[in-house]
Image 1 (cartoon, rainbow, N blue to C red):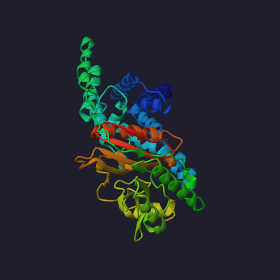
Image 2: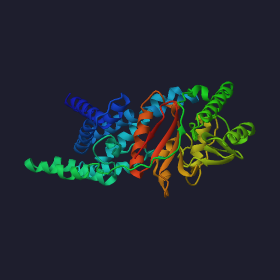
Image 3: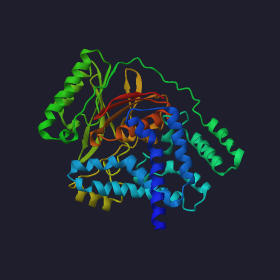
Image 4: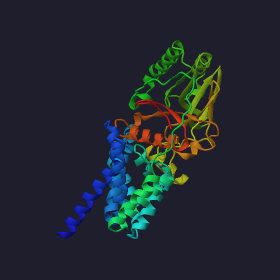
Length: 407
């Protein structure tokens, strides 16, 4: 009986810590945000994690895996694999449960504190959306790595120092405050990012294609009539292989004499496919292929033999997308924009070699995962990277709201 009570207590505490760890995310989902409350709850989460036992940390990771990433399973609906959803959620929960369990492998508070910092570098199968610094995106603290070290150090002092010495925890915390004044360059461009909500179950249906193409074409014409300089349409806004559609290419090239157009679509080379952004400007075309592919969505991050087997069993033999070797910049009326497609905008690789580039165009299709917290998590990640690299992000989305994020 005592053992059962102990397990129940561990699970209860773990659930509480996982809610602390996820509070900022869910507050924003329910349209509530308070930087002081977020700061306190996030600090409490860090304190609780470095003081938790091995068992509690396993269940904490288990619940965090569910609270943050349950939506990853939703895409399986569109492959007629809905029966796998519970197994996918359980698998995700177990992966993060094991990761958090290993953080307390030696049941030493200093090891746990160090492991918590290392957690921001741990990306299962290349999936990097669990960034512990993300807790402080909507807070009074900086999101930089050095600030996160100071926050952990502060919670360590609070945990191990005796009596009145605990007050010293405030010292490193003061240096972790976000004291950087954000400087963003305003641009003299009139940008149109129309709200588009095409359901995923309709997006690739043959009988819906002409309707979707016509909608995009009307939006472009409407943008021209309202004197916009640039229109940005979401990832795979044209649900087809655009470089093989001569009629549509000619239409877009002609329209680009009056407006710059950035739009998502597939690209085919031989028998290989890319997820791409097309930039039409002054009757010329440039194409940016995706650099970082979604694990298990666009590429299987496993040895080729296993990857081919998974594609044959679950994806009807579909092959992985190919990827570009480096990011592409688009020039719109003399202003450079780094191009990014959905998931890759939340990866450091896309921010390499920015040089003088201070703006990023991100296109996404969130219809795979809505309704869920995925758009909120993605937005917080984009805030994190905008702050980290001092970049203004323009995000055009299908299935959730568009927005502009300044650093």
